[in-house]
Image (cartoon, rainbow, N blue to C red; front, side):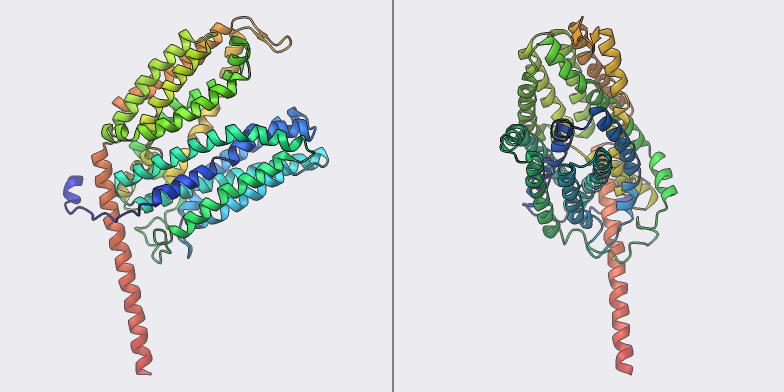
Amino acid sequence: MSIAQISAEPTKQIEMKRYMPWLFFSSSFGQGFGPLLVLSYLSFYVADYMGMSLITLGVVLTGCNVSDWAFTLITGTIVQKTNTKWGQYRPFILTMPVLIFVCYVTIFSVASSELVNVIVIASCYGISGFGWQCLTLANNGLMSKVAGASGSNRLQVTSRSRIGGQAAGIFTAMITSPLIQWTTERGINGYQIMAIGYGFMYMIPNFILFFFSKENDQYDPNFKAPESGGSVSIGELWKATLSNYHFVILFLAMIVVSVDDNAVAPLNTYYFRYSLNNFPLLAVQGTISLIVGTVAATVMVPLAKKLGKKNSAITAFALGCLSQIGVAFFTDGNFLMKVILVSLNRFTDAIFFTWGINLYLDTAEYQQWKTGKDMKAFVMGLSNMVPRIASVFGAPFSAIVLTRAGYSPATQTMADPGLMCFFIGITPAITYFLAALIFKFGYKMTDEMAQEYADYNKRMEEERLGIAAAAAARDEFNEMVDDLDI
């Protein structure tokens, strides 16, 4: 029996409220502040404000990255098995921003002995990492409930979220450093002030999303039923997911295409220092890229929708491969060419990445259709493993390239910056090409298949909840009858 035959009766889509995509936009916009502050400015705070050794900080953050891996493996399971009076995802949207706020403000407040500082920074960094993963996963899961089975609704929400994150990057890049410098010059802990201000900016939108999504994520009295996801064992979650062909191929492709972000990005600082001999231009190029990325995330949505997920991937990665080849051969000492090609790459990337978590959600819908059990939270949670696996290649690759290019830390010179520029371009060109091949010949999920899986699963879920509600009403009626007999 085909999927189409199983899904002969199409599911009537629930109308998504018009303001919902904008609520996700504001949530994503708010969440774009905290990570940038910590990742970009923690080392400056530790070295300049606290006087702590950067070597010590490096050891601390290495340990935190290890804990981050562990949290990535468990957050999907935690969210998967959550069922409260506030629903499955909304509790995390309410509580995690508060947890992250406390951690970030505390990180930029400590100034005690080095041992105390190390303990506080390590604890807050690790706990906030757990909070961000839970919050991201909760937002993704809530999106699937708000948008329903409609692929169009899902794309609308995820594209708005991506625009929100890009806009936050532009905003923070423009104001963070000047405000920190302005407050610090007046004897105020500018890092702490920014942490508090940004904290409210990402707490408030999530609180609003929590209240306005109440009808989409409610308590499920039948959550532990065998056909639901609440009773699925950890072993079954892993077994079903790792045997999900669509997920495995997607996961592999995303690791391949993410390697360049972690391997090449650190080398860009050396590019501006040794190829252009103008380090401040790094901020200029970064701001331009963020602006272009935001525009691309907006204008590329119709094209992405027309192409579909698989063709969007193939098109984006093929064009990205060409632009990165240009980076390899034409950007040595040429800032204008660098900006043009990087901006072009931002546009082509948007064709695919505007789909966001929808690809993992499609594989989760297939898994639910195949097993009869909802494992969406767990499957989407494993997407957080992609950048962590890809990051393993970053430091070794950078070391190899710098060595080949003749970089000397002692004299802070580089013999062959042109060779470094070549690797900065050719590496992502190769990864884009491999990812395009994987999607072309390995990824079999079509948009039509994904929609049929989603429709079928939605109908089964509604039937299950309907049966549970009828049973509850029947029990309540029987209790009333028993009371009348008394």
